[in-house]
Image (cartoon, rainbow, N blue to C red; front, side, top):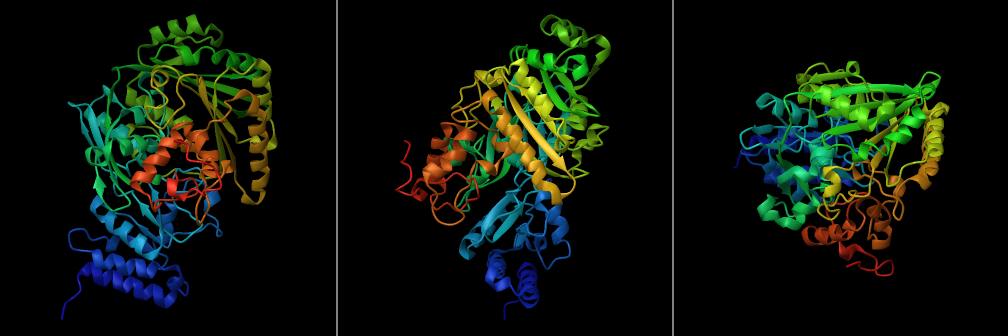
Length: 542
């Protein structure tokens, strides 16, 4: 008689418990999924102690550990049948194989910052692969490269770089709790975007598990798939498990400043002038704006990173943007890693108590709230009356906790062709607009959603058009969704797809057709393969 291995026995007991105490288990099919996993388990790559079902006492805490938007913590939010947190890439192919066999879809979660919660919710029975255990960061300071697991946060990457060298950095986002798996696969920008481009522009290798359960690196996946996952949203093509990135040079001393101006201090005129300065400035200079209500007025917070000393920064700003009134006392010199701590503290969507570089290792955002977010790209400066109307929108009661960010582009980002990677928002885009509204009580959610709609309608004449572009890392289901079941036409998918990717959407569809023709990796805004288009709606674009 064969004695079951520990992993097989453990999974068998889990299945028995679920089948006994969960009436819906058989209908959901996840007991068959666990049986399948037990067949493929072995002592080398056991995942039995990394499987969480609704029968586990830790299921809820694991699920909620990386949910950033309280809109998706309600009782009505669909929950995964199973959460699996692999600690090695070899444990992922059996998950894919068994999900296929049992008809479950897969959602992959890196940091949980998906604005629509698509990394941990679905309208059909599904399994979550949570990558938080794949968070190792290995920095090679001599080669100026790093390998990081897709579960590593941006803060972890920044911290580990600083432990090897204070003269190296990486051009990615502001918020340290964001997971690299999703952030890099959508593009990724921060204070170094004008000097070195997007995070995706600086990825030199990756490892992904495809729909066949094959573990691929850049060489074995080929350049088409490698192109697609650097800005095209990796979850459409497989489970990204690791990135290799090219680190960038930063000086020993950088300078930061924050200068806030209220409406009474000519904030409107300064914001209007900023549009003709920040996108064209020296590549070493990044100046963004945060707009928000402060008491009975509206404040424009001009925040900056300069790759150099304060004296040079002050002279540069006084020459190009004298209206801001920057003086030496507004500036602070520090290391690049300390600037990351500073920006993470006040530019994160939720306040973070960051004091030292070690605090960048924190994975969880405190004080979570309900939220809705929108993004735009601006190609022509807003006229002064347009800026004034925008700021007036922040006086609405629903906008008391609203935030509008202007993130300048230009520089290196504009020098790269819009077809070089799926992220197409390059030359011709002056800056990106990120708008977010928060609320504490979900009973009044519609009021805040309605405010966001009014804001979005107001901005229509001032932002890009045909299509009105958006940033895929701020995914927005208001643009449209794929069919939950059956085929999705090209015409239907392109409504949201062209907003994120412009003409690169067509190449993404072809890559999807090559690597996942059966459309296993699918969700509300996943790239569809060609064969899933309805013949009576739309035509093949290529």
